[in-house]
Image (tube, rainbow, N blue to C red; front, side, top):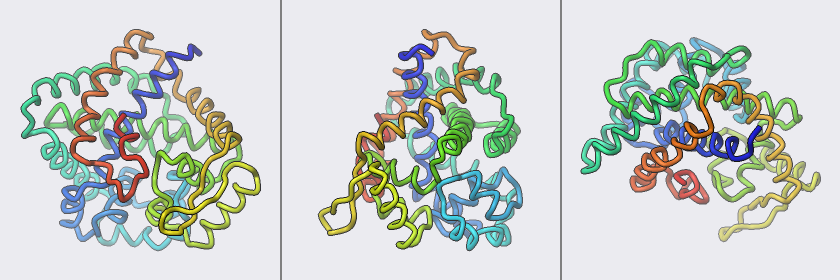
Length: 306
């Protein structure tokens, strides 16, 4: 596979992921979920993302998400569906996205240019979605079914739907790649944290529901394997830092993940993929300006919007 082509697919995929996931930290989205009796934040986000799967139990969600604590998810599912049904939450997520996109874009003076950029990216990526083989990708297939049955009202809502399917498709491929390389979900999360460009350690542990014992055990295991070192942050908490061996392992997983999406992206030429880099950057800058990725959660929020 051409290395520049692969890098451009990674770049565009990362930006699509950011366009999708910015909603998870939005107070506006939290208020929409609260209308249905769900706590803003983790509980609402779990219900919204899992809803396309139907009234599933913790085992299904845990296997699909990969890097959440199964014990924690068992405290959330299936009881979460007694508060708000999957059908309710599928629609609630659409309502939340509409409110969030309006908040981000409606008052901007450059909305015409941003609408054009969103339309360009969505139009270009939709053939990739049409070329996807969802075999073995449970979360991506369920999400695609829910989203293709919905008619978005704006170019930004349309792009969010495209970005979400692309994100879950690559995500399911990433899970398969982790399984292939023998990397448990908590270890993958820890390695990501250890890059210093993702979640802060305490935020990652809390949002994924791991106990201190589980977190320290994974940290010790990776340190003993030479994949991370462990220092301290300014408050005295453990601060993992990835080693060269850890980076090599992450790159091995990413290369496998690249392979799981290559066939879908084959419908676009190198030039068509490269043409997505600039408009996707323009849209991601809006997320940066809005503070969509809070510094209390991410070590380097700018990395989520670059």
